Length: 256
Ligand code: SF4
Ligand code: FES
Image 1 (tube, helix red, strand yellow):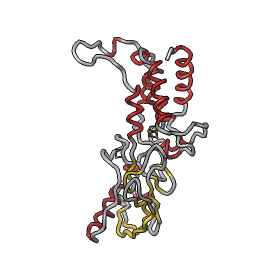
Image 2 (image 1 turned 90 degrees about the horizontal axis):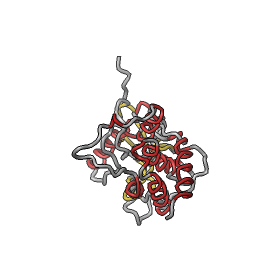
Image 3 (image 1 turned 135 degrees about the vertical axis):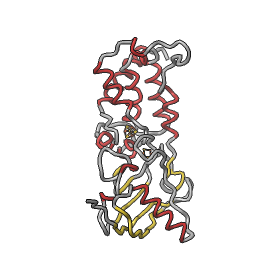
Image 4 (image 1 turned 120 degrees about the horizontal axis):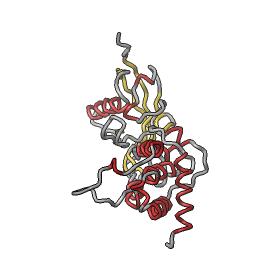
């Protein structure tokens, strides 16, 4: 038996013309929202209503809508990705809300993630951190070695896999009171640091990625652990400790 019902909600949504202008919360009434619809489908419904009223639709980021790409970065009722845990905004459903609720929707707020328009922020700082060292320089064409020919302890493989689950959504930064990107960067460092293929460039990688992170204006980590709680992929702060160890040993051995 279906438990789907329709609810009426009030939305308080951050509207901002561009990066230079000052934004503000606008209020919208939205009726007949199916509790089976996703949060992004609810925003689609709102935008349809706004277009019909000849008003400008709300700009928001999304792509895969299945928790993979990390694009759907929304702060909902004061929490990154909303009131549910372990999921992205696109996986959030309207059954988490009640008839008559007022829902606040804001963009990620961080100096390193400037607002482009409404709920869309510029997260290219994450791309630049990745470009600074989040790769391995191996030949992946032609006569490559069979991956199974390199023995990897099961525990390390599992930890590397868990770190690689980071989708670069930025919820960790948005949640952190310091706007720190340590959870993201440490996941990207760890996924290579734990594997033999990643050891070759390990020293340069951690030094370059941390340097880029600092240049982008992210805050410092003070170990509050909020990032881990709100991360939709369950990335552990154990990765931050690993990155700090990698960084210390790289600093001691590097001649840069
Ligand atoms: S560590 Fe978690 S919260 Fe941060 S970017 Fe990766 S998936 Fe998103
Ligand atoms: S739209 Fe891709 S993770 Fe949400």
